[in-house]
Length: 243
Image 1: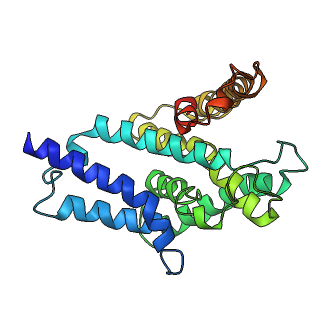
Image 2 (image 1 turned 180 degrees about the vertical axis):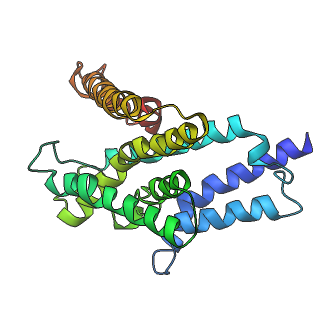
């Protein structure tokens, strides 16, 4: 019971710090994500922490679900900052970063992992797919401002939009690394299934579900009668619930 109370107290303190620290760190060469990473390290390593003895590898399901939640919230936060309508020309810099820069970065990191670190092809490709995407949280200080805050700088817009999209674009390469590893053990062909399922189907399904969900939630938020629209609540939990 005491550990539960301590855990709740620590969680409350972290929530308060996330609201207060940005003002304190404004003139320092630090960012909120850097401080939060340090707090996480202290929570795990401190002998007085309620998280002592918690091994992520022994709690893989919980670790995976928490990681998914953090990624979804971070990507939603990046997406909500964007005011520019989606178009080929308006998002041209984002498409170049996604379609050219990121695959080249994955290939470069994979080559370094293979040639310098001595990793196998699958492990090197997995390393490249994990490190190439821009982190939407750690890059928050150079992204665009809050929604409806004025004209968006092209460089900041490109970094923000790319940070929100590149995780999904990198996943096919993660699955390719897994497929290569499984194929090397079983000897079964993998490329056609990877291309059909992991690339074409999952990307198309993700784009379609995201587009449809965005249309529905946009209607519920902004196009219902004024007294019934979700936007009238002005509650942050609306954004969290949509996420």
